[in-house]
Length: 169
Image (cartoon, rainbow, N blue to C red):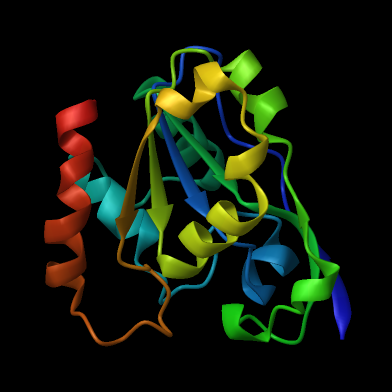
């Protein structure tokens, strides 16, 4: 097993939405980019929601999120995991990200969207109890995972559920 270390958040101080994954997969870690696996539908879904070009560079993708007041991060700062599957995360090695610090710097965030059930489970188990009272007024929504491992829904079915984000833009 190898220790995986996540990335810093993509976020501006005026972010209103936070999208949380669990931990970057191996391809993302290799590329140092969120959702780098070519079959992950995260970026195509975001391009659809924000009605933009799908040929953006990674830096342009980050700028697109920031411009639309969307922050992107993961629940875990680090963990041991063999491969990319969330089911392989060694629960005894989990180190969650510092959400109190994040929310103190991003006071306009009102809603958190989880990219899949594992991100939601990890947040609820490891982070929600440590939130300050002011941060507990956030709204939380679980969306279907954009991972290619979550193949029970089509791209169109995932997109339909992810479009809830439009109501918070």
